[in-house]
Amino acid sequence: MSSALPSRLTIGQARAALAALEPTITQDGSGGRALTVDASALEAFDTSAIAVLLELRRQAQALGRTLAVRGAPAPMIELAGLYGVAELLGFDSSPA
Image 1 (spheres, rainbow, N blue to C red):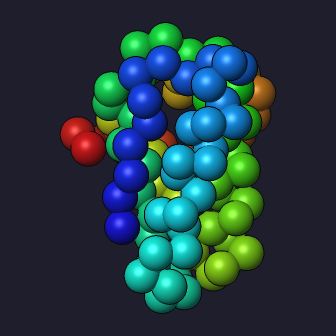
Image 2 (image 1 turned 90 degrees about the vertical axis):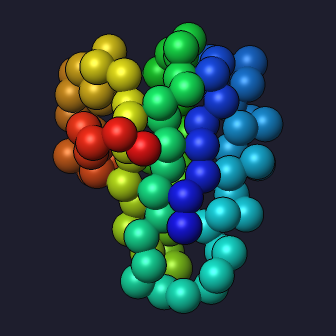
């Protein structure tokens, strides 16, 4: 199962982005299936984008699923690293 982040994800868009992405966690209801988030369209973001991904991960784990983030821009991976959460978010350098 895959879903995509919007091109802009800052504090002003975080709540709406999370609400739009949450249904993909429970779709296909199969526990243990990976949820892949495509971050390749992301052009403008702040720490809210990291918070959205962490919340998606938390919800996915509650259902026995994992989270992988593909196509994340290097600055996002660096920001997650600064916060010590890059490994939690399952960044994948392959294209989404």
